[in-house]
Amino acid sequence: MSDSNLSQGDLPKVPVAPLKEKPSRFSLVWLVPLVAALIGGWLVVKALREKGPRITITFRSAEGLEAGKTKVKYKDVEIGTVSTVELGEDLQRVVVKADLVKAAERLISENTRFWVARARVSATAVYGLGTVFSGAYIDMDPGKPGKPMRHFTGLEEPPIVTTGLPGRHFVLESPRRESLEVGAPVYYRQIRVGEVVSYRLQEDGQKIVAKIFVHAPYDKFVRQNTRFWDAGGIDLKMDASGVHLYTESLVSVLVGGIAFDTFDGGLNAEEPAPEDTVFLLFPSLEKAKEKVYSTKNYFVLLFDESVRGLSVGAPVEFRGIQIGQVIDIKTEFDLTTNKVKIPVIIATEPERITFVGALPGGRTRKDLIDYLVSQGMRAQLRSGNFITGQLYVALDIFPKAAPAQIVHNGRYGYPEFPTVGSTFEEVGSKLSNILDKLDKIPLEEIGTDLRDTVKGAKRITTSPELLRTLKSLEEAVNEMRGLLAQWRTQTSPELNTALVQAQSSLAAMESALRADSPLQSRLSAAVEEFAAAARALKVLADSLERHPESVLFGKGQGQ
Image 1: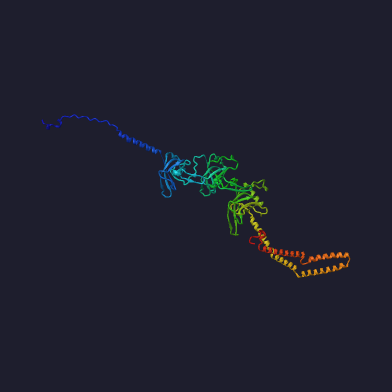
Image 2: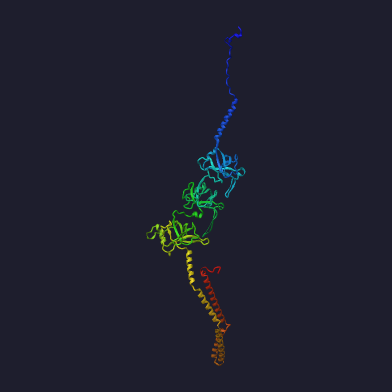
């Protein structure tokens, strides 16, 4: 049987060797990427865990700021780096993004402030000299803890940083800025104990609100009754004891400053003032020493004369002691009478005056002002300075004043206090009366009579009749002399002696009556002086007729 005829089933079975699987073996090649992946993951986790916040700060200018180089510091410790510096969408400001370290996250809140630290020179100090070599950096003040925030508006000027310093902050209010300047010194008895931190205008525009910081341990001297005043410049005062010059320091003269002290009750009168206590800032030491009274009485004064020189804040005085001040000045024109009245509103402090004894008639203290008015108290405008023309309101007793009383329910809203005319008005009235009397004097007639008198006296001294009379008298004396000589030779010695004496008397009379005799000279001089006096009286009469006011004010330059 051939091989071709063999069927498949007749073939012999060939033994098949069983296949044996090889065991799997781990290759070291895969270990390297695995370790790298683990390290990379760990680095990513670590970077994410250590990554700090990214903040955005806007400034007006990017001067000195560079992305990737400018640092963010707190107390000269680097806490971040500026990542980008771009222009804002409005092209008005610069947007700076900075990445901070994880530890800086607790420093960032809504109260945090940022500014660019550069080299600056001010009147009080020099700042940031180190930035001249290292470059500008962004400085920060964390402030008080607050809500988290990531977007900030940077300050253009570096603030006074007091965070973490021992001491307390206080608030000062003033109608004007005075010497309030950021960084201005604060003094206590001429020792610098703090500085002005900030100031701003109140929302209603009525006050300046400033914040100051007083370092420890001096902050304990700020008490509830402490007074603050403007210590800038020089305070020059002149009184009966001489001229006094006050200043805290040379720095306060140049850049200003604030000073404080406690005047009432000593240091132990009040407990130390708590944080952020509000105080009033007085304009000067003298004002700070004045007592402050809570009770104020308001009155309206009606004047019908000029109030030029009277201003709001002018003092109201009683016998030289200030008891109030002028609050407002208005003008009122009455169309029915065509008269002008000037209502002046004043505020008085009655606690400044102490009253001794009881009021007569069973009156109470409420009736005190009415009683004083019934006794002649009036308000009057007086000059406080003849050079500047400033006026003030004086309250005084005028016994001869016309009866008056206070109108409590007037239409001005305040009680109407009676007034009297000012001193200038009284002087003007008296001057007008004097001028009226001078006008009534017949000066022209008096001058005419004096002139006629002088002419009559001159006519008498130069008349021919007087000369002829003197000449006839001289001839009679000569004849009498001859007759006496004849009698002397013919009479007895006694009669001769008498005649000699008579002759001497006649000689003396003749000598006195001669034209060149001293008697004639004195008579002529007396007549001339009388004529000169008459001429002077005429000149005086003419001058008074032209300028009657010279009787009061004297001869002016133009007369």
